[in-house]
Amino acid sequence: MPARLHHERIAHAGAAPRKWLALTHGIYGAGSNWRSIARKVTDARPEWGIVLVDLRQHGKSENGAPPHTIAACADDLAALFAELGGVTAVAGHSFGGKVALATRRILDLEQTWILDSSPSARAKTLAGLDDPRDGTVIRVLDFMARAPRTWPTREDFVRAVVGEGHDEGLARWLAMSLLPDPAGGVALRFDVAALREMLRDYQAVDLWDVLEAPGHDVEVVIAAQSSTVNAADRGRLAAAPPHVHVHYVEAGHWLHIDAPARVIELVSARLP
Image (cartoon, rainbow, N blue to C red; front, side):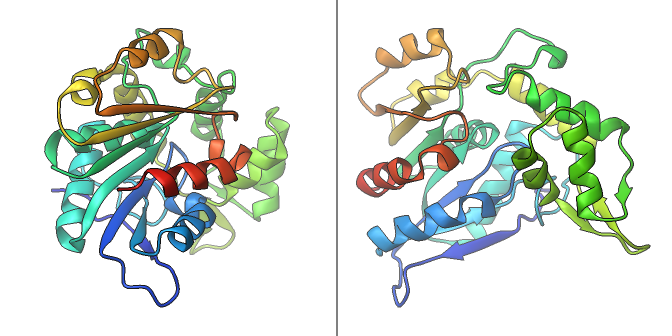
């Protein structure tokens, strides 16, 4: 049974959108990471609304039943879209980009957005996870595996993450996933084993057949300063079929933080 996904609707003030873009996040994130961009896109395109979605095991969504895979996440999205109605496009960043692409396999939508996410499988173990921040993803996962589940305060958690060699901005972003603990203090929301399963599947799944299959438009946004979409991927995208449109943004992997104005401009211009 699909996980019930927390979602937030964003629309221009006074508008009644005819169509909705579902937008989701990367690993350790939440739909709210994209709230500022969503508001500005809907201001520019008031006929569109945006649904910010938390994937299973993230934010305020249900954990969902195993297996915790890209396909399971896509099934979760499909169930949500059926419930909401009106969702005609899907977008995802990083891990969420591969989920969006897998959703294209099972739903007939107008458009799919892949935001600095590779369709390729990576022939590596999880310990060698490709990551645009030199192993940050796996180092954070390892930290969470050995860290206490509860913390007296958010600041204690932030100090611990910084003490592991991560920057304070990342630490505070991760702290957004701390929840109040009934016994006092705050608790880490993540199930490390489930996240490890999700990341392993992200590495293992190849979705080029979905991206290249004829159908609705696929908008591929590459962060030019990121290694997530590597040279081999970029070469293959350069020869992609006409329904695949490739855009470069001068930014690192967190392109919504590094270059929000360009992302807003691009999405606003390219929505049907």
